[in-house]
Image 1: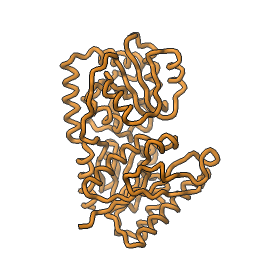
Image 2: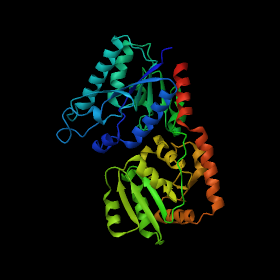
Image 3: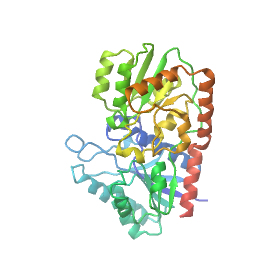
Image 4: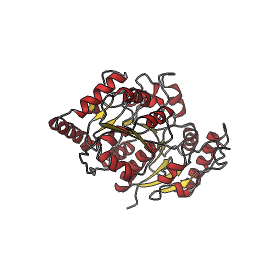
Length: 376
């Protein structure tokens, strides 16, 4: 029996690719890799169309992308484009439409075409494909959509009007999007628990984006006034942050490791005391945030310090050690509370993490997506 086929628009980069292309998100790649691997394990064939987002020429290549930077376990077609400012979104859309139509003209028929985020070049290309092939469902995977309340979802609805359904990673997005066919699928994990240990050091770990809107600066201000001398703060992520660089230079408790292989990050997280999940509370992206980093932390079954967010399903709230507000003083209090947790209290956190993990394997998420696509 022939496997059902899905076309996926979005690149899946390997470690070297993520290091090379600063604009490509490690979190996005890990999310896509997890879901597509689970779909493959459920007997679904995946064909990926992969434009690689580079810095605009002349900083980046005029025609960016190398197949060697793509994850080899998937059938990925590199989508080349003219990388000039203002022109490149149109160029990606043109190239993407062409390579997909070339495949469809061979008689290949996927059960659906999915795009990772409703970016302009995806929606433009797939709108044209949908006009020509209305029998093939087009489904949006919706991540960090620009604040849809600004125009009451008008831009999203207009650019995706020919799509047959939407998958929202954000809980708020799923609840509030004025569309009929929608699915909430926030994040997943492999189903294999990492081995964890209790390290002699008290170590807080932050792994993720280092931009200010992610809340890292409030965390830095909290560390500056944290009186405890026997704790350490390990940061992992791409790019850099000037405030963090300055703090690393003057505070031996703070260590920046940069972007590291998964194996190195896993080893560090296995020994961590707790994880830090800050967020700028008033930022416009909070409605459309999703818990990829949160679920990554949860699999280690250790305390996580951070606020609740509209985009995060309420089922995660009980797992968080929540600062009373976004002030540095509240973060210090939350961190001190965490290092003083009893064994009984940390065990309860582990049990609560297990309850979430049981529901959030990539296998179960892939099954939900397949059922959603079959019902369209």
